[in-house]
Amino acid sequence: MATKISWTDDTWNPVTGCTKHSAGCDNCYAERMAPRLRGMANQNGKYRNGFEVTCHPEVLSKPQRSHVRRMFVNSMSDLFHKDVSLSFITQVFEVMGQVPAITFQILTKRAERLVELAPQLTWHPNVWMGVTIEADDYAFRADLLKQTAAAVKFVSLEPLLGPLPSLDVAGLDWVIVGGETGPGARPMLEPWVLDIRDRVVSAGTPFFFKQWGGRNNKALGTNLQGRTWHQFPRQLT
Image (cartoon, rainbow, N blue to C red; front, top):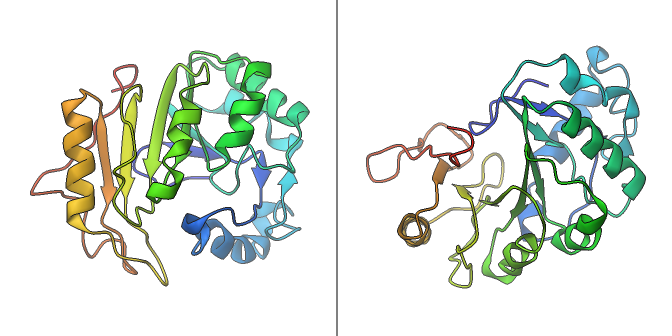
């Protein structure tokens, strides 16, 4: 699936569907998209189950036919959802290891299951592991992420719903910030973003500001105090 996500080149969805897990899920874009995708003939029934968690072994070979540099894994799901078996997760990791030319970017809100399964997975150098943190109550997800052996550990603070004073940026390789988009989008305040940016920059960590958000994603733009922040970890610039 082609993507407009500014920090990746393409998406790969060996799993589709999810269930709400925390506050950031309230206006889930993937849940909104699923009914439309279900009705599209060119999806070949991939969304036949709507937004129920469904594994798709038939698409595991996609990366081997791709020539992109960066690939976001499961933009329409969460690889560490409880309904995705360890066996299938292992298959996904095996495929990623077979295509070292592609950097795979994984995000999860289910950091507890991530840290539980992490010792049983092979952490290839081209696999970047991230957690989503939308509010300070979930800052602990970064601490769990740091316990994994991922080569690059990153956080996506999107949708950012409040300040994150408890977030410890030490030990992180990349920090992404973005406001919520689409119907019902909740506002993101500049002081929250500036506090995070200043701490991240002081730590020498790459900072990526994705967008301000809003119902019309493009209306408020992507600049922060007059400049664009699109920094990447040194492994991929």
